[in-house]
Image 1 (cartoon, rainbow, N blue to C red):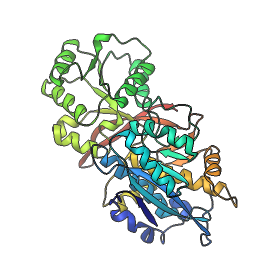
Image 2 (tube, rainbow, N blue to C red):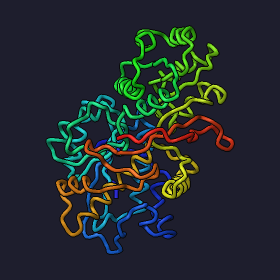
Image 3 (cartoon, rainbow, N blue to C red):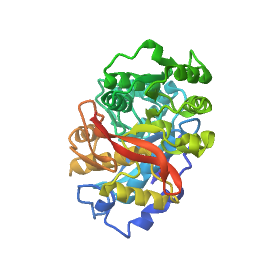
Image 4 (cartoon, one colour):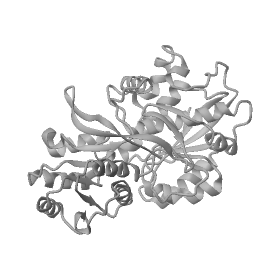
Length: 398
């Protein structure tokens, strides 16, 4: 059952039909990697969950993956305890402040929890509304480091500084001198701050290059004159691609390390299209997930996701959507026969313990973000195609 507030998001494809196809093949608890015993009784009530994801601009593919992961888990595991699930979709707006009204609309619709959001600025904009409305909210993309002291806001993705911190520690341990390339965008500044924290050694100002002050060509020239041991590229999307093109065009072979969103999901296709396979190969990224992770939960998840999406590999955004649905499912089941109010749901989220995620075991910490492993990945051939292939575990952060 799906409703909508504002424009209904059209992306359902095979995931919409998956419930009827897959449920006949395996038990619900196995499919959901859920420790609770699935309910065999007819649901006695319906619980509405709001899902905010973008359907336009640079975050569209991220929003689509969050939606697909959330929908996949829901289709395979409904009902959640005694409750059927009604998903009420709403489109995330490009301007953070415009999303306060979107949250308001979902609250008027009577949702018991809200999930999603791709842009970090949206999380900051809706913080006060979520906290004063006392509605559980589970973010499904990296949260800005400044989102602190929240009681009702959870996150299944992580904190934006963590991939930088993981890479900083790795490069410091390997005695690599670095040049940092970033911008004033929130995600970039968080990544740079995280990298500095992990690197622990002072980085000279001359080795911190910003796109607002230098063109991609000038950045490449500067890096060529320094000849560092590694480049930390705290950029993604068009900005990240522009710098990569300049580096490749200048025949700079220094290894590039970046937060995972540079090459994650549809972003890898964009990098390959812009640079070619030869130019894209060899980029290192840090992320809390890769589709090739060898654990039973991920092997089952990737199989079901590929089956439902005509062979498309799942991204970290799909995993965060899946785990948001799983966390809500576990919280509802933990309530037992109690009415699942917003207050009860929020309290149960705080006592879930470990969640069996496709990325490995995670658990919400005191900041309501996951304690989890971060992995070093390298863009390289995995069969006939380039993919983010796991190289090693970097750190456990959260």
